[in-house]
Image 1 (cartoon, protein in one colour):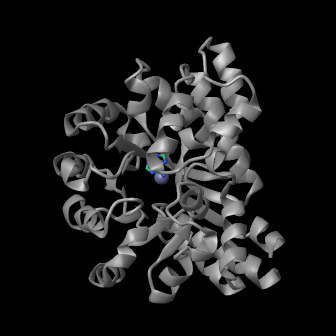
Image 2: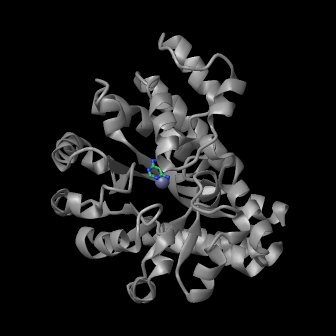
Length: 334
Ligand code: ADE
Ligand code: ZN
């Protein structure tokens, strides 16, 4: 089944570009930009990647991102991820980026987006990989700061499909960002948000009713509230589920206890994603393989998940049809 998964055409809907920052590239850029990082060897980095919760991870993730300075750095980071896509039969990807992680350090919005954009165009030309961008607001910062980011994004609106909400969930409910999400919608952005990763089902309610999001990032904790599950199904909202992330951040203690199969069985539209693959020990195919083995998913389940990733993507309708056709052909022949 590992072979079947590895070439199965699929889309990725939940990937933080800063979370695809491999230690090797981080070291190279730290040296090139003369920035100190608190590790001497790759082994030391890997030793530090043992997390007890989301915040524990975020502290290290923001420290790692601090070596990204120049447009070429963002280009190389993005190109490295898109090369993985090419290797993993990810034909469409929706890339989250956190502008505030960089603008707060004095990096221009233009530097970030131009570097990412150059890589996206190259991957499309070389490999036919389609991609789009999700600009995520950092929820541990203020709504006013999110408004500043929205303003900075406007000259690049044509390059950004959606806004998202990430970072420290507990204590930073969606309601903190209602106004900036409304303003983002008025600018034409699709609305997405992390909700119910560590936070309670109430945060998922706020995200769907208050932020009015079109898809839920993570959403695991919706399962504690039957009425919420019913509503998510009724409104046809998909969840971008991230199995290895959930394991590494202790959202689940064991992949065998992961709720993905339960979500599928209840009729929730789930997708599988890697979140921050450089930190959580695996890109998309490893997430598929690990959750397949842990939950004994069937081939039909895997195909269902791949189809969901396409159906619930933000790609244009003709691109979705093209990708679904590729899945169909692949399943007939494999
Ligand atoms: N930023 C990067 N990865 C994240 C995650 N899993 N949850 C919240 N914010 C994040
Ligand atoms: Zn995430």
